[in-house]
Length: 110
Image (tube, rainbow, N blue to C red):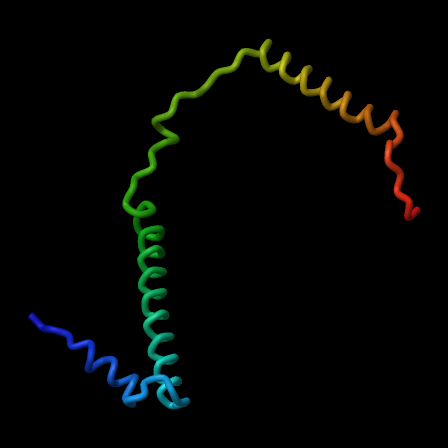
């Protein structure tokens, strides 16, 4: 098994004794570019996995047969008509409030 020595990896980016005390543009650019490449590689791998799952299989390996397994809900016509009448009555009452009343607080800027 291969062992990784993180001290050698960090020395590649931080090669001074004072670490971050002074500005070193080349070191900073190396850190930014390597960080960006790691981020892009992770994003490409994740996006590729999601694309593969949606293109060639069901999303994330779950078969969604929900539509074929569910029962159809049947509502009675009388109950639907009662609900529609009640909603129409509420809508009419809501619209009547705006058409018949004047606002109690008037805008002084007008």
